[in-house]
Length: 115
Length: 115
Image (cartoon, rainbow over all chains, first blue to last red; front, side, top):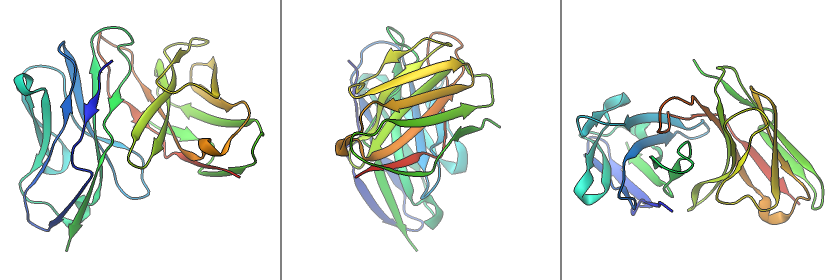
């Protein structure tokens, strides 16, 4: 079965710092990749997704992610974080076989941005 | 905009009770999902359904069952609630197009406490 690893459990940054959150998955075939965000007290929202094509994907609120197939990675980046980016971030992957509708989620990274 | 509505935001039940969590989506999505979210574990899939009356087990189905009698409604049932089922429960839905998963849309969650 596929798995998703988010190695950073809690990241604390000051405003205007750059952000990179790691995500690695363990499946060798075709994948779809997602980043979701959960702001305090709100439901999970889609930040960005990768299906195919350009491995550099741009999402909402200035976030982007790069799919590196050789490294099985899909890291999330933002050049300059804001206090309002404080949230929990989840990486997720779906594979092209079996129960293809399923998403496997990572354990999440809590981002705290200090004003 | 897709709306996924979970019937309760907070719920408190007693050990041994039969508990029903309801979820309704308004976008005619074929796929519906139930997850539980626990700190440090991310989201874990309990059950999902890709059509009316169809269901498939996710990663942690033990102690749960589901019902999908209508396309828009997906119910999670705790047959005999136990304290280790205290958690945040998330419902999601997605379109069933293509071989890979479409983005899932999430409800606000039900925080269930079993005493």
